[in-house]
Length: 198
Image 1 (spheres, rainbow, N blue to C red):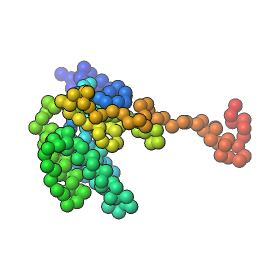
Image 2 (tube, helix red, strand yellow):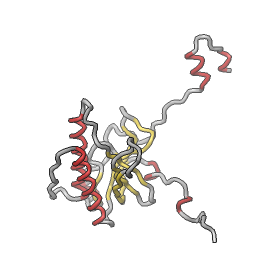
Image 3 (cartoon, helix red, strand yellow):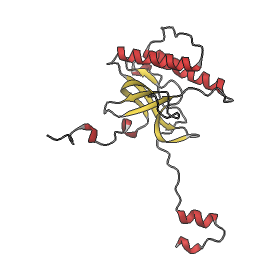
């Protein structure tokens, strides 16, 4: 008996979330994962994973904040706004959010609550907005929209939905221009031989 089954989905190749199309994606499942003990420091503490009907996923990463940065207060407010938005969708806007003493306690507490809420509602489906960054900050890879609102329950009637791409959102991947090595060499080396172009 063989141990390799090429009929298995694990050999189907990489699935692309929403086939790479930016916009509002419907019927998405959501999962929460926490960084493994001993994992690299530069990995996010938590990931909110959005999985579409084809089984393709896209992550929204959450890191502990750096208290030494100059813009810590602005980042704390932004993180708090995001977590409050997600809480309203996964748990409910009428449910009071507990108080927290630190940003780490806030992130741990909120993501734990999200994980528990999702475990209690395994069949719940959501909408999520994805883009390729903005005109000013283009991205090569698709991402979950940066600022709320970007997630809501499928129970929200489409006509009542608050989700949508922002005016400055990019809907296609940004791929930086590439230059041939000979071009760079001719334009950066004073004694470069122009015949390298030929």
